[in-house]
Amino acid sequence: MEVVIVPDAKAGGELIAEAMAQLLRRKPDALLGVATGSTPLPVYEALAARVRSGAVDTARARIAQLDEYVGLPADHPESYRSVLRREVLEPLGIGMDAFLGPDGTAEDVQAACEEYDRALGEAGGVDLQLLGIGTDGHIGFNEPCSSLASRTRIKTLTEQTRVDNARFFDGDIEQVPHHVITQGIGTILEARHVVLLATGEGKADAVAASVEGPVAALCPASALQLHPHATVVVDEAAAGKLK
Ligand code: F6R
Image (tube, rainbow, N blue to C red):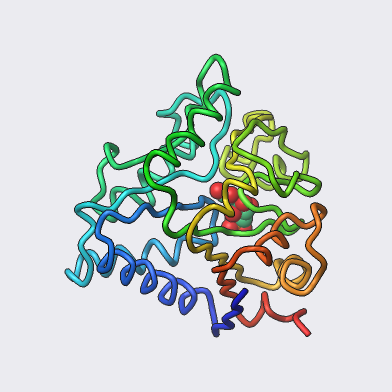
């Protein structure tokens, strides 16, 4: 695992966007795995700037979703599909035909999860998976105690995560779904390159546990220590508790 400490979130965004741009120059139809949440936004902004300036061509790029709420209509503004369309696909000029994601509205959610894992495999696997990290060490919606070998599956959100995410639902926790589909930790580890971005002091404990703690289900992001090509990009605040 490689740890890169950058001065701030913007620098982290630039660094990871450049890695994605280099990947796309090498492999124009690369499958980029993307996360939602606040942390990756500087990455998407920096990559979109490269697209606008012509420094990178996304005409053949493909995007894969990490997780999705169960039961929100796909066109709900806070479904992760909608969020990714707004924050990633449109700014990068990538169409929905190049988008892979699980069906959060499927009647048979378990079948939809298995179908998504299969689709990722059939697409040749994720080339670069971008991750954020929760304050409790979660990646995707794999909360503490998730199996390190888990596949894409349905999970129940913890009360804390629903409280955290209420900010996207007019501050009303009642509107936050109880269930999500998330790529499993085992699924995430199949990406060829996994890049985790963490910024801000609030992530410092989770970063220290993930990078320097034991590999343990109690800290899902610690599983990245098992990956042959994992890069953890942290700003100085998030690096504050590293030894
Ligand atoms: C989002 C996701 C989550 C977030 C994490 C951090 O798709 O998978 O694991 O990355 O909750 O969220 P932010 O970046 O908002 O602090």
